[in-house]
Amino acid sequence: MRIIDLRSDTVTLPTREMLLSILDAELGDDVAREDPTVNRLEQLAAEKFGMEAALFTPSGTQSNLIAVMTHCHRGDEMLVESEAHIYYYEVGGMSAIAGVIPRLIRGKYGVFTGEDVRAALRGNDLHFPPSTLVEIENTHNRAGGTVWKPDDVKSVASVAHDFGMNVHIDGARIFNAAVALDVDVKEYARHVDSISFCLSKGLCAPVGSVLVGNKEFIEKARKVRKMLGGGMRQAGVLAAPGIIALTKMVNRLKEDHDNAKKLARGLTQISSLKVDMKRVQTNIVLLDVSPLNMTSVEFVNKAREKGLLATDFGGTIVRFVTHYGIKEEDIDEAIRIVESIC
Ligand code: TLP
Image (cartoon, rainbow, N blue to C red; front, side, top):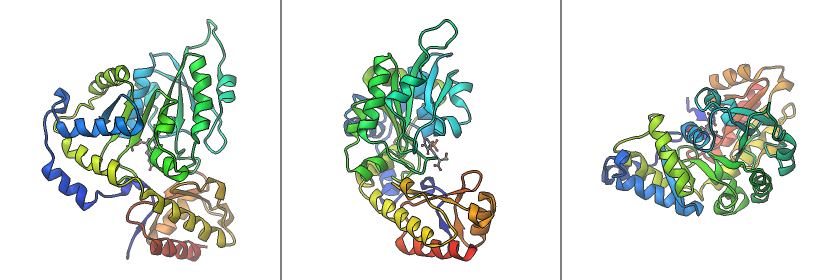
């Protein structure tokens, strides 16, 4: 049975070109900054975002944690959307390791405004922790891959900066946002203090994320990465596919977005099912299976038996993610499988 794996874009395998690039990668000890391939990836990432510097990290989770630890002191407060990945899926590292307390903002489709930030701030009082960081997730995973416009980011950043806070973007899928709106990622970067993005999701590299920011921030972040055990030695074997991810895999994300729309439209044709089409902006489709009187776990198990893999997103919500390797005909087949479950 052919398996259609729509659990996540994290399941993408490196392309042949990526694997071959590993053989020829020039290597050195990256902790001593002597890996020319890592240095090239970091330079390329900084240039792409119009930022001064960049740091290669093992994962998006570590990249976000490094950002929090670099921007904040223990006991600080960070403003974050109520369903943000850093709060929901990163094992509480922001508090357990960084010692930072989250203050939650409820966004609309994952997006909040400068006014929301202003409203969440409690002012200077003996009782309150210092609020030092605002985190934005673009695209917003649990909202369904929804996109922040550069102006939305600008509005939040301008209020945050007025109050002396820094702004970090968890841009695990920021290239999906940029492709969806046809804007340059620099349009996001120019408003904020740091961005973390993943090479290992839709861009297909096997491992790694990159954190970008100004030189001083990245210098500090490099030390934090070392403390967390993220200093890797001949990491050029991972950076080489990362360079291909960054230079050759961005534009094709549009295919994934088209496939997600096709899937969402197909699912809404099945009379009993509900997809909020407003959420379908990039490569994620959230399906509400409540009309089937099933939980998302039951639905995901049923689909697996029929060769379709999806993610249980809690309650009655199932997540499908389109990615490299998923073709239009796989989408047709996925719709047929869901229809057969119904
Ligand atoms: N997201 C994964 C799971 O952890 C849920 C997925 O399948 O979507 N930020 C965002 C917005 C993410 O979606 C993820 C991974 C991360 C950070 C963490 O990246 P990694 O997995 O590299 O630590």
